[in-house]
Image (cartoon, rainbow, N blue to C red; front, side, top):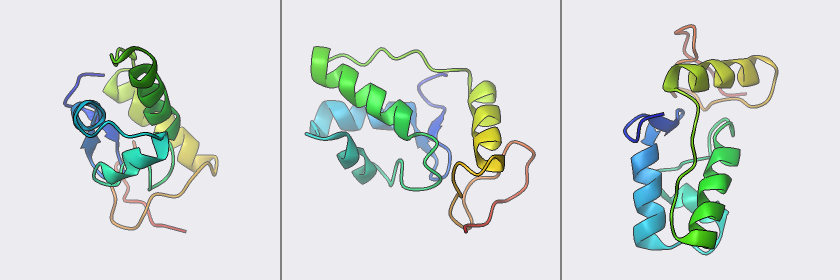
Length: 104
């Protein structure tokens, strides 16, 4: 995944935004990453990735997490949603097949 590709697909939050938020705001808990444009508060798919980025920054001050390509990431998220892993909020980004999702 490239820095300007979406890490939180529900709210269009890029990896770069999250990394800069960590660097500038220095959150004390991973949950505070939700203050970065709502990251992690939609379907929940990105939470493990957000937590990993946070932990790396807390341990070493550097974020170097290798993420899947944007296409693979979107496919995995679509599968996660289909399997009942989470429900994106109404009006959020479409799933892999281009359909808009509905919350609930």
